[in-house]
Image 1 (cartoon, rainbow, N blue to C red):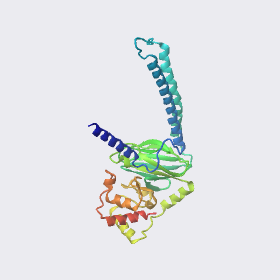
Image 2: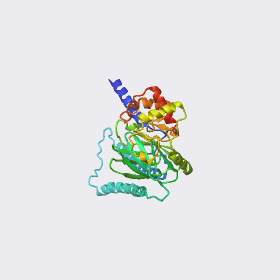
Image 3: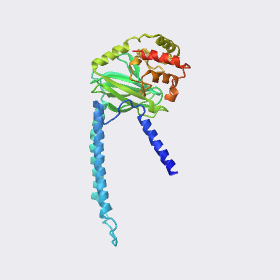
Image 4: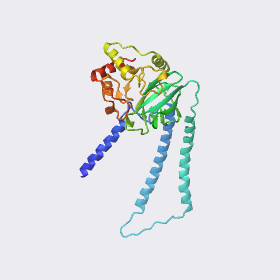
Length: 336
């Protein structure tokens, strides 16, 4: 019986660990900040950690002293002096926590107000983020661009995010760049972030939102400003034409079976479509909301078995065979 319980506990722990790692496309750590928002937030984490460590050490020392100083000895009875009602001790027990809380409170309020001041300095980028089951839509109103699951930003600039949700509550979180902010249906929340270094930063939905919550990741791709301008230019171009017979067959299948939910143009007219925008799909690093490498094998598997990979998502059964799925994958991977 004990052995069975041990095996059950081990399986449970492995399951929890697996779900914690699912969707992590690159390392996620709040202790490795790569922008001013995350740097201010991690300073509060360290401050609270050292305060709590100090309290823990003091309490542990007092506890050990009492245990050894007043332990029972053979043939002896010793009752320590009672301190009940000692006003100086009671004042001390109130004043010390108040001082520690004040030390934590002042910088917390300061950081909170600093981060709440997301005023546009005229050099930032505005993006509307919409959380959906189970993917992310990113709309750049100033640029007229829509994309999904890859948030492209320039380094060194404030990114002003308008956070919304189309179905249930989600939570937008990029650990290396900023803390969590909920996306709530019928309401718009605001936050800002900034990347100081180019690179790919992993993001995650941090609010349980359904059966595939753990599979709702995204990537923030930070470019140097010139590279970001090049990406914008690519996204505003018309989708590339199929370069092979197989890709042409895939385009026909897409038009018949997929175009009602997905778009292959980044135009702002496609905001709010039921499925992710697929413009420039062939240049993406990940697929299915950043949980799989973007390659032909995975894409065919996704087209054929979307519910097996991400239960509860809205991708329907296309009722196509493997050859047709390969043609559709060929077409999508050539969208560059």
